Amino acid sequence: MAANADGQVDVIGHILDHHSLEVPFINAHHVFDGHIELPHFELFGIDMSITRHVVMMWVAAALLIVTMMSAFRRPGGVPTGFGNFLETIIVFLRDEVILPVMGESGKTYMPYLLTTFFFILYCNMLGLIPYTATATGNISVTAALALMSFAVTQGAGIVNNGFFGHWKNLVPGGLPAPLLIIMIPIEIIGMLAKPFALCIRLFANMIAGHIAILVFLGLIIMLKSYVVAPASIALATALYMLEIFIGFVQAFIFTLLTALFVSMAAHPDH
Amino acid sequence: MELAYLGAAIGAGLGAIGAGLGIGLLASSAMEGIARQPEAVGDIRTNMIIAAALIEGVALLAEIICVLVVVTK
Image (cartoon, rainbow over all chains, first blue to last red; front, side):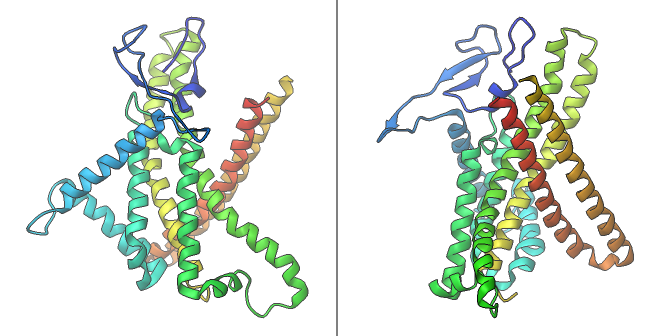
C-alpha cells in the first residue's frame, strides 16, 4: 500500500490498474514497495499493454488449468484431497443451481457456467493475497465477462427458438399493437440492463470491499498513531474474512444469474 | 465545490438505506417462509439470493455514481 510522509494514503491507486507489478525488495525505495515494470505496446493505435490485472488474469487462468487438471485426471476416477473439495463445489452448483434453474438442458451450458464460476472465484481470491491485484475489480474485466454471458444468452435463445423466434420472444405474445410501441423499447432496455447489472455488481462488490479494508488500515497512517492500530487491524481482518465470503458469493451470483438469463432466453414459455 | 462531497456522502447513505430496507424485508419474509415450511428451504434460499442480488445491484449502482461524483468533481 502506497503512503507518503504527510499521512496521505493512496487508496484509489491501489485499486486501479498499473503498468507495474508490486513486489517486495526489487526496485524498492523501502523494503516493501518494490515494483517490476511491465511492457507497453499498442496495436492499431489501441493501448494493448500488459497491465497487472492482465497478469493476474493469466495467473488465475493458469491456476485454473493446473488445479483442475491435477484434481480430475485420476485413473481411479475418485478424487482425493483438493479434487474432492472442488468436486463438492461442482456437485453443489450442478444439483442445487444449474439443473433446477435450467432443467436437463443445463448440462449443455455446464462447462461454460462452471468455468465462469471458477475463473471469477480464482480472480477474487487472488486479489486477497498481499502484493496482488483483483482482476475482477477492473470494470473492463467484468464488462468482458458480462459480454460473454450476454453472447451465450442470445446464442441460447437463437439456437433454441430460431433467429426470428428469439426476437419475437422478446415481448410476450398476444399483446395489442399500441402496447408494442411501449413494450419493445422497455424489453430491449431490459435485455441490455441484465449484463450491465452483472458487470456493475461484480465490479462494485470487489472494489467496495478492498476500499473498506484499505481505509481501515490507512487510518493508522492518517492518524499517525499506534493507539488506533489494534482496532483498525481487527476491523480490517474481520472485513478480510467477509471478503473471502463475498468472493464466493459474487462468483455464485454471477453464475446463478447467467444460468437464469440463459434459461429464460432458451425457454421463454417457462 | 465542497458541496459535491456532501452530496456524494448523502447519496451513498440514501442508497444504503434503500438496500438495507429492501434486503431486510426480503430476509424477514424468507425466514418466515422457511419457518412455516422448512422443506422448501432450498427453493427459498435460491430465490432469496436472486432477489437480494437484484436489490444489491441497484444499490451498488447508486454507490458507484456517488464515487464518480467525488472522483470526477
